Image 1 (cartoon, rainbow, N blue to C red):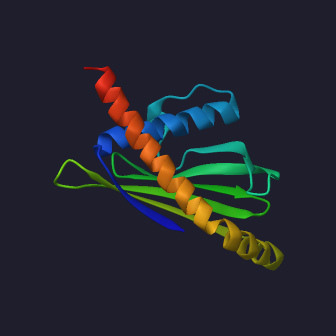
Image 2 (tube, rainbow, N blue to C red):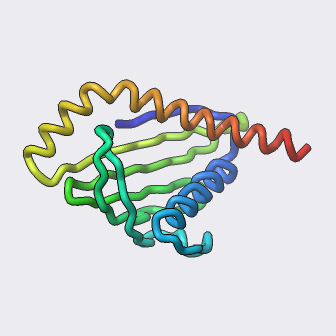
Length: 150
């Protein structure tokens, strides 16, 4: 699944927000404080994931591509498969930013693949809408932060 949204923000602003979120997620999952410098390609940690049906699974998270301020990609491997998420931030000339969000799932078995296709058929539209709304909320957060600092 891929979502593309144009927002009023800089790549640095959104990248900073994404990295703060990743740092918080890692600290919540591991119980350890980490520095932003540690958030680099190859960083690995353990966490619990919950699927669309509410089932939990232990997973290993890996930051697969961290390039300030244009790319943030991660994958989460569990006993059911690999979830991949990616943000590509492309600055536009008019003070806007094009945000491309990609999400993919690679199941480990044929049964998991069939199950995913069925569930995805019903959830795809709501997932796309949720991701667009999340990106819009990040934009609003950035704008509110700018307004508050004036």
